[in-house]
Amino acid sequence: MESQPYRSPSTGRRVRAVLFDTFGTVVDWRSGVAREVEAFATAHGQDLDPHAFADHWRSRYQPAMDAIRSGRRSFTKLDTLHRENLDQALRHFGIDPDGLPREALEDLNKSWHRLPAWPDSVEGLARIRGRYVTGPLSNGNTSLLLDMARNAGLAWDVIIGSDMTGTYKPLPQAYLRTVEFLDLDPGEVMLAAAHNRDLQAASATGLATAFVGRPTEHGPAQVADLGPEGDWDLVASSITELADRLGA
Amino acid sequence: MESQPYRSPSTGRRVRAVLFDTFGTVVDWRSGVAREVEAFATAHGQDLDPHAFADHWRSRYQPAMDAIRSGRRSFTKLDTLHRENLDQALRHFGIDPDGLPREALEDLNKSWHRLPAWPDSVEGLARIRGRYVTGPLSNGNTSLLLDMARNAGLAWDVIIGSDMTGTYKPLPQAYLRTVEFLDLDPGEVMLAAAHNRDLQAASATGLATAFVGRPTEHGPAQVADLGPEGDWDLVASSITELADRLGA
Image (tube, rainbow over the protein chains, first blue to last red):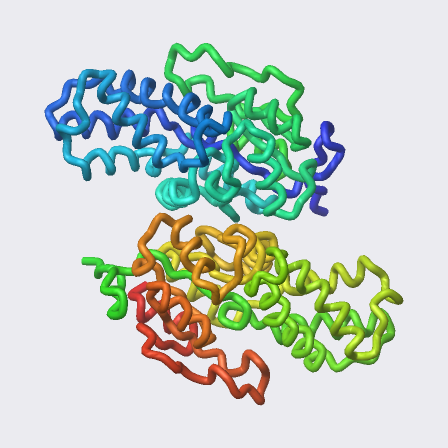
């Protein structure tokens, strides 16, 4: 006799879809970007600390979206923001991007499309997909998430990119428009994320929540998001452990 | 040595994504709807010819979208149009929908989410997915296409529903917005469809084209779309044959 799908204590509903933050939660952006930065630096004779560069590039992620979330800038897809931030990061490290081949920079920018999954992600997602609708709920654009899924072997049923909702997390509409495309009630949708701020916003819009700990997302000296900081429905240290908790 | 992806003679580009019309091309809507109409009629003591009812319900599909395509009505998702058309079809057959349980009508309306694949679709799509990005390019809404995929086992990489493009085929924006989400050039995207009108519109917006013959979509007396009526890149009698032609 098969058990029922997981019922969220916070929403009182049985979960039908489990959606995942991607950068940091499903894929290891820091290692993936650093690896491609290293190859790029070698190929173009630049002296760069790959992890320091990855961290700096990533540090420009939230400020770039803030301009859009605040309304100062119209919606612009993440590939474009990453590309702008890449130029700025290169300049920060004393490198003139205009002196580098345009195609090589475009290709490096696509490193965000080729991020490696954490060791438990592929198996965990495939198991969860057996019982629940799965998809990303990410600030990535559709083509980025599609490439990431094909490259890393992520078992999504559906990809609803931020260019489809036209907004960025943690604004409420990012969650609510995603739920609307799925034609579900917010309480039937669970967000799984390694970031407490993301879960806080999802919970505020009525979603179920699961914290997946990724204490080395930012490297060995990570200080934030080392554990759950809210009353989330589930807490797991991997996506396979989350699958266990979901009965998947 | 693996061969290159298929190059479209009409666009001059190698195809990277193969997108499919769904109703009629991938799934057998007439048999699927008729089967559920029959069960519904039996359960509720109604005398209905299931195939005649399915045909009539479907006949209201294009006129309902025409109101939106012409701008007379704002975008409304297909589930809602199907539900309105169901009431009208019941009245056409002399049945008052208000005399029937609301939940039963909602469930019958969901028959469009549960359509059976043609015998070659599941294998053909899985093969094509091995070499190309796959997805529907349908007038169905996202949740309909998602349910259809999970029920029938369709191997999509991505689902871009008409509620994401906010428009209906054969308007050019239905094709172009889909291509934009994929971040591809129109010539790198192939539409596979059993309907010449759909392929004509896709070709006019720059897409590659494949005709997949479905001569019994409308039953044994079908008169339209019995063969290709344009200079389409590929012509096949099944999705497995299309996979052969695509080297997949």
